Length: 231
Image (cartoon, rainbow, N blue to C red):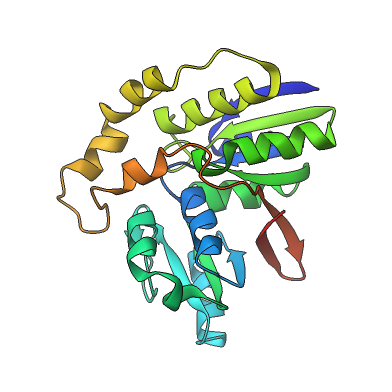
């Protein structure tokens, strides 16, 4: 099994084999939390205009996510794990949600065109994701660290890719070092400043929990939609 590490939107567009799209802050930390709270169906939509149109067509569905970190206009919730926990099971159970994000969801849509399989990567599901990959034993695995808005590398996504690689091929990984690399950089500190309500202080702490869930999450195309689901 060949494990390839790449990054950003270009990396997602060129990824082949079994592809893991990694978005730690925060899309693919949100996804397993949504299923934990009983969400029935999660649709990933990269185009914000189409996401809003789907919400208009199905007003009973939830619209979640952001455009360049700002909560999507007309949405029911932004892209915050902390906000998902605050809402709880009563808000999500049995419902369908449309999720739009600038990095993770957009990268997933890009990777779907060339990948054999697309998995959603975060620290919360890393070991479960690696277990699935090892069980299926594909010839090529591409780990895509989506970074900040899919344009610039972000330490949390690079660290998660390093952790996944360590689980797959034994590459050394030091989570204490990773925490130091992540928490003192702007991608985490912008949350801790508390200046923007849609960047809650608690989100980095939630996003950096390792192996909280024992189920990987994949993305598949169902008709006109890309649907994320536990595997």
